[in-house]
Amino acid sequence: MAHGVRWSAIAVIVRQLVQVVSAVLIARVIGPSSYGVISAAMIYVTLTSLILDQGLSAALIQRPQLSKRAPGAVATVNILLAVVIAIATWLTAPLLAAFFSTPELTAVFRILAVLVPLKAIAIVPRAMLSRGQAFKGIAVSDVVAGVAGAATGVTAALVGADFYSLVYQVGVTDAIVAVLLWIFARGPVPNFAFRHVADLMSFSVKVFFTNCIAYFSRNVDGILVGRVLGVTSLALYGMAYRVLSLPVQFVGQTVNRVLFPVFSRNAHDRARVSAQLTSATETLALAVVPVMVFISCAAPELVRVVLGPEWLPAAALISAFALGGARETIFYITPALMKAFGRTTLLLNYEFLATGLQVAGIVIGLQFGVLGVAIGYTAAGFLLVPVLFAIQSTITGVKIRHQVGAILPAVHASLWGAAGYLAVGLLDLPLFGHVALGATAYLALAVGVLLLIHRSYTIRFLGRAGEILGSRRAQPGSRPTSTGTPNKEAVL
Image (cartoon, rainbow, N blue to C red; front, side):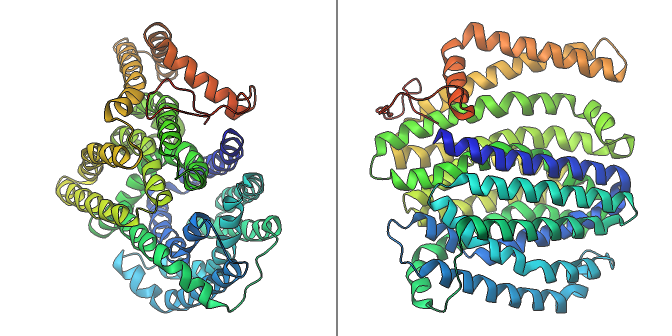
């Protein structure tokens, strides 16, 4: 697991980091108005990725036994569907652009439609590499493609491509990912043995509908903001939302990529999965909560330093989303747990509940402008925490108090750090002095609390970090044996 997390971390962190850096640079160059076009286009990019998969990649990973022709048959389905999506998008592009009252989106949507088959080619090779826990191939593909795509997008913006920078970035990234994943996975070769696809449908259909609901839940805010408040507000909202998605992409996806196949292989041993879940929760909490609480406190200063004064209205949104990002990252592994145990009906019901709460929060918040939407979205997410605790306890047997105990030390230390940063703000220092001294005070207080009050918790985290980074190895044959006691050994 540590080996898998290490390679998955390389893939996710490097690729997402260069994408975030490129997004910031492009945003500074083209400004909020043009960046709103990019934000609207990204909603489409995410949707096509979802439709192309149909949950079949999760079925390829989850099935204990898999026929040799099934991957090739799934690849054929994905490619055929990509062609249909591309044609439909080309024809409906003017209507999509009119929905956002942005005529420039017509050409953007049509170019992105031509690129859709590239995404289809990469789906099955990625799933098969994940099934075999061959994360090194995925890491190399994602890193090379991410760096090349980001460099292309930034260069395009600097030479005057404006919002078309996104098109260049997406095209280069998807092309390189498709080629490299296909090489590392050695196929599969498409075939027409569709009966093997039918065998996977009982699992994949529920996953697909769950993913559709999750997509709607996570994107209805952007759709409504773009439609009601305009693409400039969408740009501010979209840039702030990146803060929520940062830990999910950097940390949550890294761990989730590894834990889904690992949970699937160990589903027969609840005690082992319970210990792995608690271990993962501790690791995610301490890796994410302190960082996101700091961003929430320092958002106004960070926006002026990183994005420039033109983007300052996004600071309040970033403060709200940073806290939501910490929560979402910690519980990002719960859907993977449900899929690994074949609890797709439970997953579907949860997504219905989550969508209902989040849509309600968004619609209520929309009455108060873009900041109201951010607060409504974040608040709805926190209302789901007891439900997620209950689901984890039902599936693995881990006690809820152990899961709460896995999170509280990170929260406690972060609150002390936040008090230190806010206290520095009372000194009325210059911008860079405020950020530097505030960050120092935050770090000193948070680390001090962890070492003095939560020492064993911190030592466990450092031990797991060492295993992930390769600086120490787990003892041969060691394995978690407890059902949810946080201080039991469990290799992450």
